[in-house]
Image 1: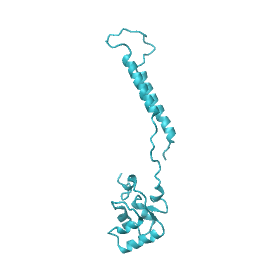
Image 2 (image 1 turned 90 degrees about the vertical axis):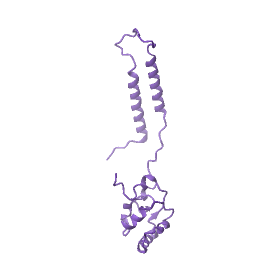
Image 3 (image 1 turned 180 degrees about the horizontal axis):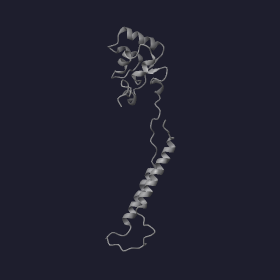
Image 4 (image 1 turned 135 degrees about the vertical axis):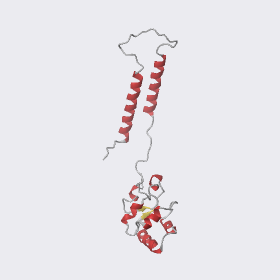
Length: 169
């Protein structure tokens, strides 16, 4: 079981880490208290100009990162209950194993449904699969009458696993 933090806590942790990193980088250019405050400079460059530039650049970078807005990622897919864990099955996104709960559907009919390259626009589009026999169509019709199927927009992160069920990873 993995521990998960809330997005706000994750953002705060990331910002604290970046601030500490930038502080460490900036402190590399600060003179230590043991050194003399004035020394003879042998280069043509004025003392501290590179150091001052790096400290300012690190400060601007830290401020930019700290002020960056959080990304709005899709955390929960709204069709998750229809991928095989509920009473209904989304024919465009559910993988082949979702059909195990419906006797007669797995593996042959389920394989024919999940191997289609084009998405279904309605449950009735399933009957257009050329390789379906009349007996298989009657099984589908039985479950369609019970309201076991629905059609949602295909989501790429689920369509890719329809046949393989993630077993190839």
